[in-house]
Length: 103
Image (cartoon, rainbow, N blue to C red; front, side, top):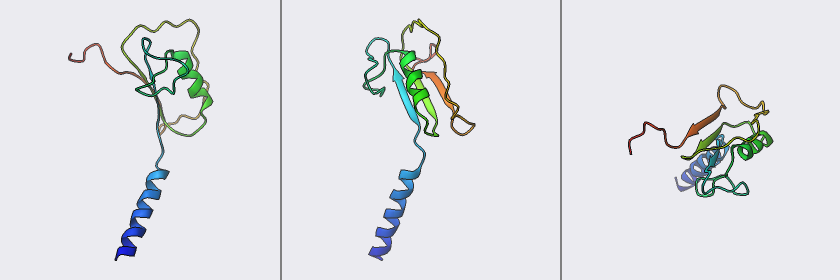
Protein backbone atom coordinates (compact mmCIF):
# COMPACT_ATOMS: atom_id res chain seq x y z
CA UNK A 1 0.00 0.00 0.00
CA UNK A 2 2.83 2.41 0.83
CA UNK A 3 4.50 1.66 -2.51
CA UNK A 4 1.23 2.42 -4.34
CA UNK A 5 0.94 5.79 -2.57
CA UNK A 6 4.51 6.69 -3.49
CA UNK A 7 3.83 5.74 -7.10
CA UNK A 8 0.61 7.76 -7.16
CA UNK A 9 2.34 10.78 -5.61
CA UNK A 10 5.16 10.58 -8.17
CA UNK A 11 2.65 10.30 -11.00
CA UNK A 12 0.68 13.32 -9.76
CA UNK A 13 3.86 15.36 -9.37
CA UNK A 14 4.93 14.48 -12.92
CA UNK A 15 1.51 15.49 -14.27
CA UNK A 16 1.65 18.84 -12.50
CA UNK A 17 4.97 19.65 -14.12
CA UNK A 18 3.50 18.93 -17.54
CA UNK A 19 0.59 21.33 -17.11
CA UNK A 20 1.10 24.30 -19.40
CA UNK A 21 2.47 27.35 -17.70
CA UNK A 22 1.00 30.74 -18.48
CA UNK A 23 3.53 33.53 -18.78
CA UNK A 24 2.66 36.69 -16.83
CA UNK A 25 4.44 40.00 -17.17
CA UNK A 26 3.75 42.90 -14.83
CA UNK A 27 4.40 46.53 -15.79
CA UNK A 28 4.61 49.45 -13.38
CA UNK A 29 5.64 52.82 -14.79
CA UNK A 30 6.63 54.17 -11.33
CA UNK A 31 8.51 51.28 -9.70
CA UNK A 32 9.40 49.12 -12.68
CA UNK A 33 12.71 48.61 -14.44
CA UNK A 34 13.13 47.00 -17.85
CA UNK A 35 15.98 44.87 -16.50
CA UNK A 36 13.62 43.29 -13.93
CA UNK A 37 12.12 39.84 -14.56
CA UNK A 38 8.60 41.28 -14.95
CA UNK A 39 7.08 39.71 -11.84
CA UNK A 40 4.57 41.39 -9.56
CA UNK A 41 7.35 42.27 -7.08
CA UNK A 42 9.88 43.21 -9.78
CA UNK A 43 7.83 44.63 -12.66
CA UNK A 44 8.95 45.96 -16.00
CA UNK A 45 8.74 49.69 -16.69
CA UNK A 46 7.57 49.85 -20.30
CA UNK A 47 5.07 48.20 -22.62
CA UNK A 48 7.81 48.08 -25.27
CA UNK A 49 9.96 45.78 -23.11
CA UNK A 50 6.99 43.51 -22.44
CA UNK A 51 6.35 43.26 -26.20
CA UNK A 52 10.02 42.39 -26.83
CA UNK A 53 9.85 39.58 -24.28
CA UNK A 54 6.55 38.26 -25.60
CA UNK A 55 7.90 38.23 -29.15
CA UNK A 56 11.10 36.44 -28.05
CA UNK A 57 9.23 33.67 -26.20
CA UNK A 58 8.19 30.92 -28.61
CA UNK A 59 6.79 28.51 -26.00
CA UNK A 60 3.20 27.54 -26.83
CA UNK A 61 1.63 29.10 -23.75
CA UNK A 62 -0.84 31.82 -22.88
CA UNK A 63 0.55 35.22 -21.90
CA UNK A 64 -0.96 37.91 -19.70
CA UNK A 65 0.45 41.43 -19.49
CA UNK A 66 -0.77 43.28 -16.39
CA UNK A 67 -0.52 47.07 -16.15
CA UNK A 68 -0.37 48.72 -12.72
CA UNK A 69 -2.10 52.04 -12.24
CA UNK A 70 -0.38 54.91 -14.04
CA UNK A 71 0.16 56.77 -17.30
CA UNK A 72 2.20 54.82 -19.86
CA UNK A 73 3.72 56.98 -22.59
CA UNK A 74 4.16 55.20 -25.92
CA UNK A 75 7.15 56.64 -27.75
CA UNK A 76 7.12 53.99 -30.48
CA UNK A 77 4.69 51.56 -32.05
CA UNK A 78 4.31 48.33 -30.10
CA UNK A 79 3.92 45.25 -32.30
CA UNK A 80 3.29 41.67 -31.27
CA UNK A 81 4.81 39.56 -34.03
CA UNK A 82 4.66 36.20 -32.29
CA UNK A 83 2.18 33.83 -33.92
CA UNK A 84 2.13 31.25 -31.11
CA UNK A 85 -1.29 32.27 -29.83
CA UNK A 86 -4.51 30.32 -30.36
CA UNK A 87 -7.96 30.03 -28.83
CA UNK A 88 -6.46 27.97 -26.00
CA UNK A 89 -3.28 30.03 -25.56
CA UNK A 90 -4.24 33.69 -25.76
CA UNK A 91 -2.44 36.98 -25.32
CA UNK A 92 -4.31 38.98 -22.67
CA UNK A 93 -3.51 42.60 -21.81
CA UNK A 94 -5.29 43.92 -18.74
CA UNK A 95 -5.18 46.52 -16.00
CA UNK A 96 -4.41 45.47 -12.45
CA UNK A 97 -6.97 48.00 -11.21
CA UNK A 98 -9.90 49.16 -13.30
CA UNK A 99 -11.22 52.75 -12.94
CA UNK A 100 -14.58 51.50 -11.66
CA UNK A 101 -13.10 49.13 -9.04
CA UNK A 102 -14.18 49.99 -5.49
CA UNK A 103 -11.46 51.70 -3.44
